[in-house]
Length: 399
Image (tube, rainbow, N blue to C red; front, side, top):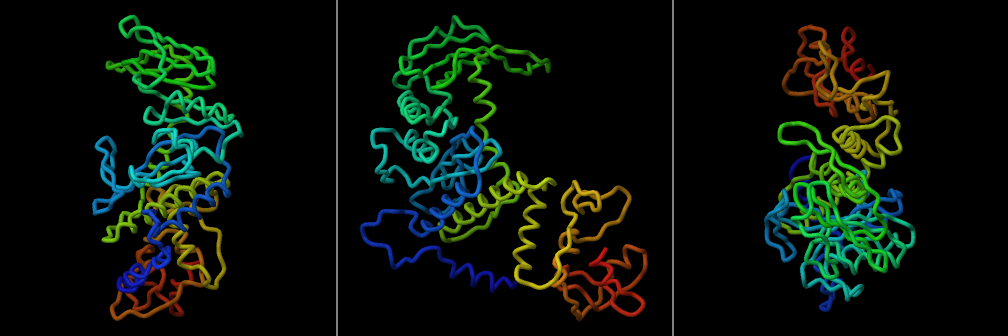
C-alpha cells in the first residue's frame, strides 16, 4: 500500500455520524462512542476474567489540544487521555472508560466521589458473583467498601490516612518495622496500619487478622523477612493487572501522531484490543507466542485475508519441535532475512515479479553461490532465482 492510499483511507476514517449529534448531546467522545460501547461489550463476552481483578488508571499519549487531555506528573506518560480500566492479573482489560473531565455527567452513584464512581461503574456487571476487587488509595474509601460488600463483592486496597471514617490506630512512633494495628467496624470493614519502611494504611471488607510475611532486600543486598497482615500479600499479588496490560501495550504500540484529537485515542483502543487478543491466544494455545510474534501473525493474517492458497503450519512459536522462529536463531547457522511465518505461510499471496535492477538471490547467498537475478517475490520483497537450473523461488517458500 502506498503512503497516499494510506493517508486517503485515514482521512475518511469515521466511527460515528457527525450529523446525528444533537445540540443537547454533551458526550465529548461522540466520535468514538459506537466503538467504545461495542468493544466493552465484546471484551466481557469473549473472555471470563479471573476471580481477582484490579481497578487502575492508564494513559494514552497525546500532546495536542483537547478538552479531555489530562496531566499527571507522577505517570510515565504525563500528558494524554486518562482511561479507567478493570483488568485481571494476566493483563486482560474486561472493561474500560475514558475520563472526560470534571464536567462529565454520570447519572449513577451521585452520592459517591469520582474515584468511588469509577470503581462502581466498572465493577457493576460483576456484582453478586463473589469477585475480589483491588484498587489503590485514589479510589479506596470506607463508604465504597461498605457499598461493595452489600453487593456481595469483596474489595481491598490501600487507603489514605485522612479519609473519612478511618478509626484511631496505634501511633506511628510505637510501631516498629513488621508491626501492625487494626480495627474492624460493625459492618465488617477492617482498617490496617502496617509499618514497613514507612507507614502503610490498608482497608478491606473480607480480610481477617491472619498474619503473613513479605521478603525484603536490604541496602547491603541481604534478604529479610518482614511480618505483615495477609491483606498486604494479596494486594501485592493481584493489584498489577492494569500495569501488566500497560507493559504489553507499550512494547509495540501504534505510536502515530495525528492532528485529529480522536485518532490517538482510536489507536490506543486498537492497542488494547491487541493486548486482550494476545492474552486470550496464550491462554488457549499450548505454544506461547511473544508479543512481537503475535503482532506479526495478526498483521500477516490481515494482509492475506481472502487470498487463495494453502496455509502451512508455521514455526513462529518457540515451542514447536519441527521448526524454529527466526527471532531465535540457531548459533552458527545463517538464516533468511524474512521470518518463517511470512516465508512459508499463505502461499497464494506470493507472486513472482520482475525488477528493473538486479539483486542477490537469497537462497544462493545462503549457499555461498553468486547469483543476481531480476526476479523477486512480491510479498517477501527479496530477489530469488527461478529457472530450470535454479528453482530458488519454489525452494524458498517450501522449506
